Image (cartoon, rainbow, N blue to C red; front, side, top):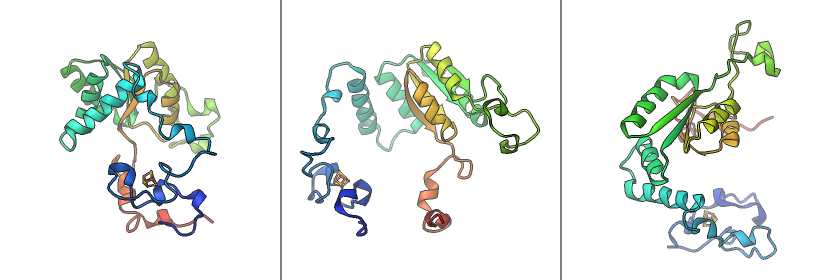
Length: 224
Ligand code: SF4
């Protein structure tokens, strides 16, 4: 635990006890679960669970379905299979696929799997609309290949297309950092991620964290 911070600024990433998980130890003094929050704006939220209890309302259904998939298939299913289990448990019939152009072949495979499992699907690639990057003020020199037509990623249009198609659950396949944020912002349906883009690690971003004390120790270098 960091000793450089005062109590007010300690949070879960400063903890090494994690008593919230299984209640087999003591909560640390700064714990968000137990500290006296009477004066705090989140005081009413600490023990608030009604969102997770109210019948078939979406939050309750999703909370239960997620926990079932975690508990029943822990360490047994791939994420592809977990998404299928989750979709079935929330009653999703039509799946939206928001894919990166760089992962279109993988998106096609996922679409085949959805069909085999009895789902409808509709997909939208990130370059849909084919608008050149310069049309939204991106400088020519900020293109990957300056001087060529280079379509912008269009996550808002991706979301609108899937909204129009009335998909029940949208699955992100490799959208860029930030483009994924816009897609999630504009998606009507719930969003889950199958692939998180990381061009350097073969779409396995946690590899940088696993190796942050060795190969990627540059990540710990302070900014000037
Ligand atoms: S909620 Fe409390 S026990 Fe759990 S990780 Fe955060 S500080 Fe630690």
